[in-house]
Amino acid sequence: TSISVSTGEFKAIYHLVKNKNTVISKEKLCRCALGKELEYNDDRSVDALISRIRKKIGEREDGTCFIQTIRSRGYIIFG
View (tube, rainbow, N blue to C red):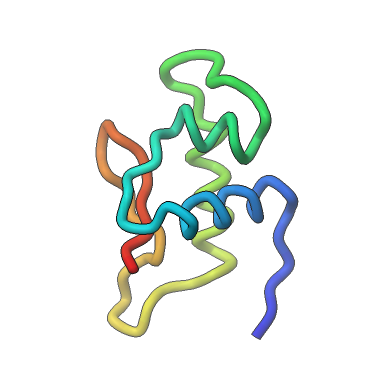
């Protein structure tokens, strides 16, 4: 099965997979995937990006998301 993703979504997925089992901060994902710095502490651009990716890739067989949120730290893909 194939899915269509934007450049930013692809970069975020690539960065998370490349660094699987490592928490990636919102700041780092923002720089790597969106090419910008987080503008303020409650900037939701990375959250929206991750939400779009989650909708496109679906869930694991056990119902959990492939991309996990680590509160106050960032995001991770376990592998």
